[in-house]
Length: 282
Image (cartoon, rainbow, N blue to C red; front, side, top):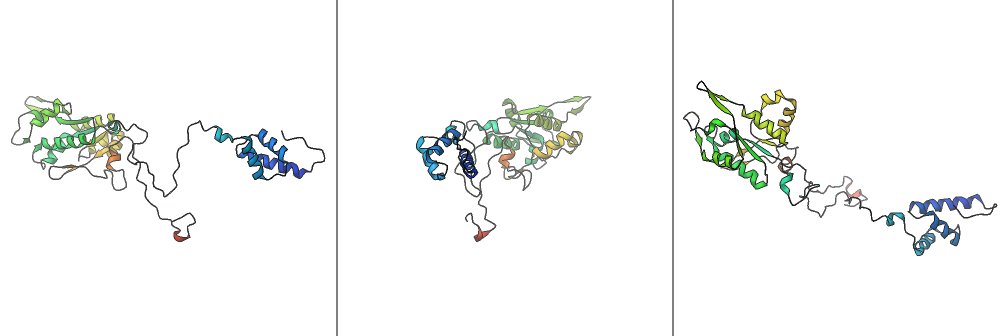
């Protein structure tokens, strides 16, 4: 409570007392310390003198006394460049970057035929795609190929480097979709359904140049997933090359597209629209 005053004290003195009390309370000082200083210096003391006396008494604002609590996030002024590396993953451990990469599901038939110029089922193209994702650090990579591709090649369906399929199968990367023969006719299960279903359940990425329009019409959830998670590619001189902007110029980068968590964008300098009239700085 404020110090006792005589009954004849002017109302202006009380207003000055309350204004100073509110001012230093907003700074974080306790009312008890403020009233004690005002008793010693008088109600008409300057604010600077009151502040010096509070500091001399050893009184500290409550904000300083509560510094043991976790510090708030650091704010960076607009237009300034941060010195921290922008390539760090948000909210994750740097030691295991593979946990931040999406699972990869490869349409083996589409990739092999694309590498073979739509004439030969080139298993070497599948190996190139798998190695590309391995080098990026992806640990979950699955390739789906129809089972009848294990059969000896025929003239109407040539296969190149067929031994690669056996190698990838031993590494638990390649998966054969079921097929069988009934009365001399081959019955083949729809491998595209396997590809989309596994990628959807794993929240991964589909690697194919096929748009799967029939599956988009079957399931609205699959339609959205195929539109947002389909990674197309090209082969340039035996080099597997996905685009740097999988969803277009205004979409995410390839690194963001293949990762579960986004990466901080690099800060860029923004020119002030006021030009030389800017009062903040150039």
